[in-house]
Length: 178
View 1: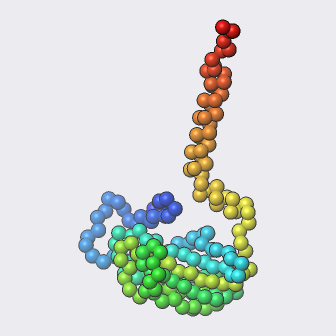
View 2: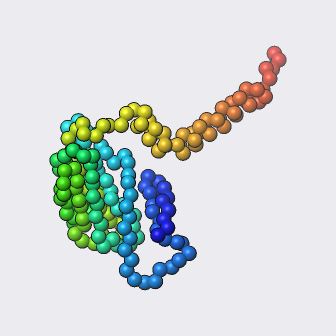
View 3: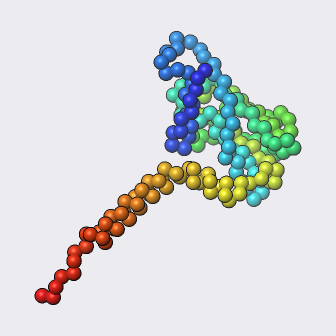
């Protein structure tokens, strides 16, 4: 199917199909496969991948959701965790299992209602995946905040222009002694 990815605040929305085509009532199955970055967190004792697989902003139920996490070859997974439900929920209506060295598979065990999602996590020892450097993190910060940088830059430019104009032609001339 045709698809489009839209940025919505700090999330991505995937639109599938053609907006001009109305589907007949029935059951439709979609398999969405994608890659993501910036899901790794680096701690002093361990590193982890923590990922909201489905998102939580669906207006319809999800019959089943699965996720497969594949770490680089030779990276052992020391612990898995998963949650289902609305944002911040701690229900565990899913299963998680290691299916090989550095591979974990997750599957929901019941339907996800509108607004509910599947979140998974895997922990692994430090040092198997290099933490991003300062320039990479700065690039991410810059990309995430580009709209604010442009807005504040524009505001500072307008204020600077007004101050320049006021100093050049807007100040009252010095008055004579009265």
